Length: 339
Image 1 (spheres, one colour):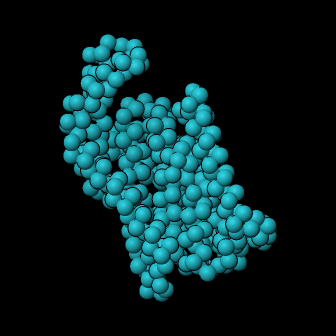
Image 2 (cartoon, rainbow, N blue to C red):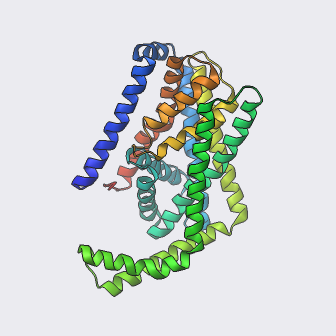
Image 3 (spheres, helix red, strand yellow):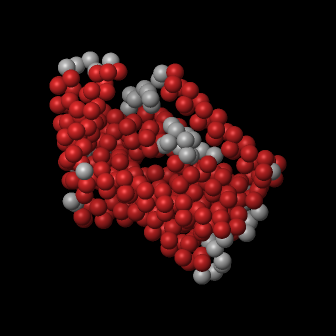
């Protein structure tokens, strides 16, 4: 890890700590601790168990996509590979940018497959997870609108999510539409830039040919996934199941503190709050927590201190537990750097 990367990690971590500190200051750290002290251990354990189910289901999702690409890895191994990806997402700024390359490296190590194939596999998981999340947002918000007025805060959150997701979809569509031009032109540009920076240690023509071949393989792998409708349907079903496990974990986290919240609120609050993960914070830490509190207080009517305590329990299950499991997995698989 070079100095610039280390500085980026440090700034992102400090930003997350600052946001959490501000959140606790606004809500009242003492009140949050008092609420946490009342948590029922059995319900907290169930929250973590449901989060573990979510992690396992999305690990199976990754294994299914890799199977379409001709990469076979054991079921248990796939769970730890996905946990490693989540770990990298959670400790690097702009989560997915750090998680996907690390996961691709792990996949190539445990299956002797090409790096590009692993990258397509984990990227497909992340992209396909967007489909059920959009559905949950609109279904959940739509049902909520039949029971209460939609406030400005929720309306802004939905609008922001739609804009961000729409932008991502447009970028993906453009890349796919012009993939042939990318394969034809980008390797030459990259070779020229690498040569000027003194980064290329091989012949420019050889470097360009190798990069072009890698891009070809990358887009061919994507096409194989896109043209497997039955497998895609199964993968989307697994994605939806994972989202439902997360929603159940949030509901149980509130139950641990003696409060019941509507399941449909959890269904749309979780994917909506994850939009904050686009901020340059490690896995959205701090940003996602604050967004969840901001959305849950007006939609549940539960005191802010109790909401914050429930969110901390939930985030302990879906953020810190994968960090622990995934960190051990990354180390065991021999990946020594996230830079």
